[in-house]
Image (cartoon, rainbow, N blue to C red; front, side, top):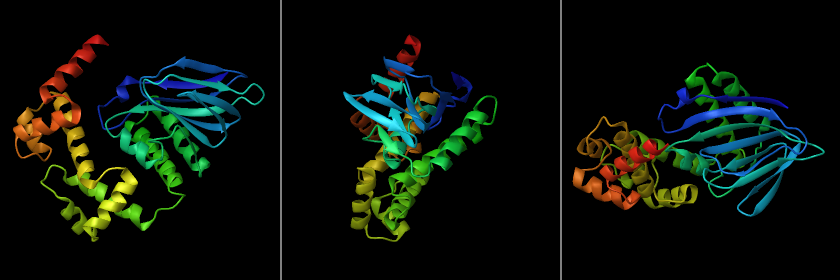
Length: 274
């Protein structure tokens, strides 16, 4: 077995996405892992050979050029073929922006995808693995997002349409301005398209309205501020685009099922139990 596996908690920088570890393995005949669960998202890319992946009562037979996703907390089993065992690379990641990444790469409701430009995807993963152990965090994350961009292109048939560009522009505007009292009409005016048209193409791409996406970005940003311990609830509310602490607390509880203080206490309890 020729395996390269890197682990480094020093790369856990608390950002919107964290790469926990990544690696490469050329499996022996029949090599398997599981049934068991993982704590982070784990994405494998099959370089050569084949094997099977079992999750949610389904069995997938995978060959070179395929990616399979393991979600945290789900029981999985994957096994290398006995005659032609697979060789793969992997990356483990998690963070506030993972759901958006899964949407954009076609993995939000799927476990397996085919990569159209496998050589480019593999190059990003190899560079990430090489850089991970003692290298630059910025280069690691650059390679990670580069790999995700290849998956995004595959999800859209290898090319962007005008609608994809509009949606991406809207998302960029939201992420840059969520701390201000922006409206959907501001988004449409910025992009230069009709508000109703923006709603339709945005919902088709992201499975939610622009307004819902804006609220999701605000709540995720608020979570990071609350967990940092450096800001009060009032400061967090104003920084994330809410008019006051009261409206923020009400919306936060509606979205998460907890008050901001309850969210902090629950997170501290989980950390103490680890």
